Length: 267
Image (cartoon, rainbow, N blue to C red; front, side, top):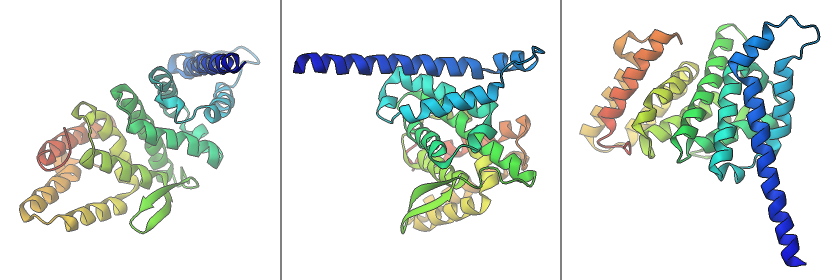
């Protein structure tokens, strides 16, 4: 009986895994830009609101995706492909999710950014870029953007509540400077980091100042200060998210990572 029960549980888990992958792929196909464009141009009366279909599907699938399930490579890739597509096409839908649903998505992105699979990390960087770009553009237009959404982070004085852009700025700088970041992902990291810097300029300056103050070696401190200065000032960088400016920042970040790789954890 115990053996049969174990087998049934195993089969149930296997079926759940297959069903989740199928649902993730279905939502990704619906969310793909080509399909969305085709359906949006359709004049068929009564055609569905694709954004609402995605919203309902997301509400169904996200509570079922645990961090343990995201340790399965194929399921993880399917999930983060969906997240990157979803946030690129419908960032406003995700922005207006309730706090629990939004927290599940941002929590999974944080988990994915530390994944060993480079494709997963790149998808997560794409998703963070979409979120941060949406927030920046909304604020430029005098709207709230992601202002109502917060995340819990570890601060120097314990846990703190902070904005999504603040949280991911801290996280990306941590990954770039102190963890095993892969240089081939520098372009995607730059695309995600640029709108975060625009949204959180004061926080960025404070984090850089704190980092420099902790550095005891005068030579390293001087090199690091110059590298941070050039990151945001070289190549006539402006405060826009257009393609030319993004290309400039990609170059700046690659130079920055090359400069600091000798005394940080970049590989």
